[in-house]
Amino acid sequence: MLIDTHCHLDAPELAQGGQDCLADARRAGVARLLVPAVEAASFQAVADLAARAPDVRPAWGIHPLYVGRARAEDLTHLRARLQHGAPVAVGEIGLDGFVTEPALEAQLPWFEAQLRLARELDLPVILHVRRAQDQVLKYLRRIRVRGGIAHAFNGSRQQAEAFIGLGFKLGFGGAMTYSGSRRIRELAATLPLDALVLETDAPDIPPAWRAGQVNTPDQLPRMAAVLAELRGLPVEDVIAATGRNAQEAVPGLR
View 1 (cartoon, rainbow, N blue to C red):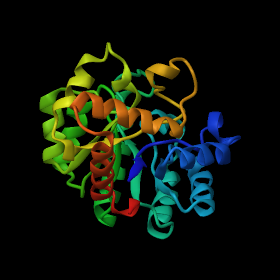
View 2 (spheres, one colour):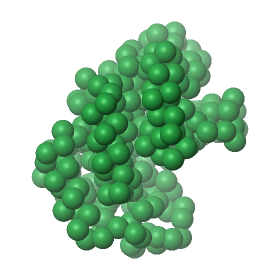
View 3 (cartoon, rainbow, N blue to C red):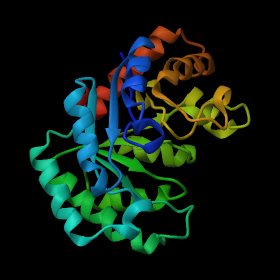
């Protein structure tokens, strides 16, 4: 089963044509799409998308890049959504060491609080780990959750193995389609296949053939083909394996 484990259909670049994006994705063979919220203001939009489309599955969380405008009561809203909104995961949550604002120190309390919610409610998490893999791993070792997906993985092999050891799958998408992304392509080619899932991160991280353009979920089959080529496998095998992996990491994608 072809599953996009990370796309933001509620993003402004896609929201206006959201139904067109979904129709295009379905025609391309995408059977499930996981849409993670990024802040409390987007919770309802994600809920509405999932209510309209049975192949869209919601996750709710507060993204590290949005904690600067989050309020304490947003965690109360998040808890209510997670308890009553039939989410498949907590996300997108995590840490971002690339940006300077909000500072990493400001992101940490939000990440910890949301990990504790995920553990309490026994939900998988969708992790943002940009240039913060070791810090994220430190918290995951301290606050054990049931696993999930490390989205847009771009760390080292040692870090990859650490995430896998903690029960996480690793998300690969547009970045691996660039010939210059040697480390990502090497990981995609050589990590255990049962540790990998596919994602677009639409509208972000467009593949090489759409560089500089808005990314959309219908690009996922070509990304699957790139992964198959890197691994020397039939694309059907890669689609089947990554689909199983996604459903193992996030059972609500079944």
